[in-house]
Every structure is written in structure tokens, then in C-alpha cells.
Length: 428
Ligand code: AMP
Image (cartoon, rainbow, N blue to C red; front, side, top):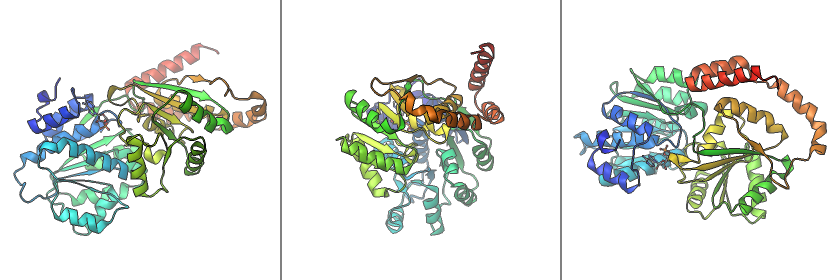
């Protein structure tokens, strides 16, 4: 299957060929013809599957076909949960539209609204925005009556981040006959409810096993004592000569602490979390992409949507508090068929968390130790009872897991069922 066969026009084919795209990914094969045919779409796809091009290319093609180029009214709006992802989408679209006369603008919070209004006045075809800022512009008089396409990218994340109200406000303001494309990594109740509100007879596209990690990622967990994690991290980066690593922490506090520790170890580091200014975050991301910064320490805010080409290593310094976020974090590596490695540094307190993650992804993550960093059993013994209690208390809610499996693909359900059967047979 080629991009030509999907019906894309020459200017787009030339642009993507220059970007090195040879064959469409699964989501692109399925979504492009549907978007061109003006169908609403509900797609479950993770970042890394090529979903930006899956909606970006046909939208650009659709806009070129309209004859209202002269008036340059806004024809498409792409809403995404974070500033970073919005900018990423903008950059991708800008690359795809290299040989087309289509103007895109990115409207994100944290930037001066007046200068954004000035850009809008010159006329743009496509807006990429975070929901709050887009709504602000609409309330200040942005003309949206010509909008033909609405994209809700990473809808689950937008809902988790509290954008439900904004999206519900925006939707009725759009023209009645517009096309809506909803992309979500997960298939939660919240997303289902939103889809019922915004989609009309949508085509369903399911490209990946939901909440399962990408096949090209090698996953491993290293057992280590809490107070030796930073040391192990620096050792792994140094001894294995990792050139570019994205490291996740659970909280802003530990991100700050780790950032200081790693700098002390002589590693060039960057830091991205919610308390860092937008300008600083973008500067750091740019430096990381240009490999001026070797280690990027980030909290989960950065875990979605960041498109860093050929990122080979992701390290979970701490496991995420929500198991599903593990999928989003490790989705930063092994993108578009490339190999990647996801390493989790787990202490004794996280042994239960990793089990929860394994239930969600339907895969076992091998646990190993690194020579010289084996956990010390003597110090930890007194904590064992406490941890056991915690694990007892936190046993996966069977009803929740069953419901979850019902909502996900047959594959995961079957796999989980098989696993359950095996566990029953094996008394160990
Ligand atoms: P996305 O899921 O849109 O964030 O895309 C993930 C990565 O895959 C980005 O670096 C894209 O540039 C790249 N990509 C998307 N589609 C293709 C394709 N058909 N062939 C090769 N790379 C692609």
C-alpha cells in the first residue's frame, strides 16, 4: 500500500516523501480515505502510530479543495491537551503543507493573546490550540462559522486534564455540519460519553491493542534501593553511553531533586514540569532535540505528545501513579517501527505498582538487577510487613479489571483470561 493509493495529492506526496515516509502506517491507511470522504471518526491510537499525519494530511487536502482560499476563514481546528503537543502538531502540519498555500496558527496559553489575535487577523486556515485558549479567542470574537473540521487529539488526556467543560462549550458554537475526528489512546467511559455528544455516525478505527505497549519496545525493570536510584541512573547513562534519555519522575519535587543530582554527576540535563515556564520548557525541549541536553527529566505532563525523533531510551525513575500513564510514557520510544528501550527503576515499594501495570498492558515486564546495585535485603526486611499490608490493601479491584478488560480489545481480554487460567492451574 502506498500513499498515492490513498488518494493524496502531489504536493502532499512530495512533502511526506521528503520527510522519509515511504509507506502509510495502519492508522493512516484507515483514516485518510475516511477523512477525505468527510466521515466522522472515533480512533483509538497511541502517540507514535503516525496519527498526526492520519488526520493532518487529509485535512490539508480537503482544505485545498475548497475554493474559499481568498477569504482565509478558519476551516479546521485541532484541539490538543498541552502546549507542547499543539506546537508539535503545528510543526508537523507545517512540514506536510510545504508545497501548499495553507496557513496554520498555534494558539496556546502562556503566550500573549494580543499577538495571537494579530496573527489571526492576517487570516489562517487551520488553528491548533489548547481548548481553554481557543475558547478565549472565540469569546473575543474569533469567527468560527466556516469551520468544517474539528479534531480532538488525545481526547482522553484532555478530559483527564479538566477540559471537558471547555469542549462542551466549544462544540455547540461550531457550524452544525462539520466533521469531527476524535483520537484517544484509551477508551474510557469519559471518552465514550464525549464521543456520543460530538460524533455523528462515526467510523471506528482501532489500530493498536488498547493500553498495550508498542511491540518494538524492549521493556525491563531494574530492582534497586530507593536511595540508590539516582546513582544507578547516572551509572546506566554513563556506562552504556546513552546519548539521549528521557527520564520520568512521579512528582515535580523528585524531578527537581533528580535534576540537581544528575547535574552534580556532570550530566547535561533539562527539566520539564508544570511549574516551569512555557518559554523555558520549549527552550529545553529544543535543546534536547538538538542533543545539547543529554538527559531530559520530566513529569507526566511531558509524557504525551512530545515527538522526539528516534528517541531510543525512556527511563522511569519512578513508576507513574496511574498505570495507564506507563503506556504513554514508554510510547516516547520505539516510534513508527523503530526499536526502543524502556527501563523502569523500581524499589521495593513499587513492586506492587509494576504488577498493576502488567495487568493493564497484558504483558510481563522482566525484573533484573544491575551488578553492584542489588537491593540490600537486610535494611528492607523490617519494611516487608508494611509493604505486604499495602499490597493487600491495594489488591486490584477484580470488578474494575473485568470491566476494564471488557472495554478493551478481545486480544487483551483473551490474554488476561489465559493468564487467569494458567494461574489457576499452577498452584505456585
Ligand atoms: P505521531 O504518532 O503522529 O506522533 O507520529 C510518530 C512519529 O512517526 C513521528 O516522528 C512521525 O514523523 C513519524 N511517522 C508518521 N507517519 C510515518 C510514516 N508513514 N512513515 C515513517 N514515519 C512516520
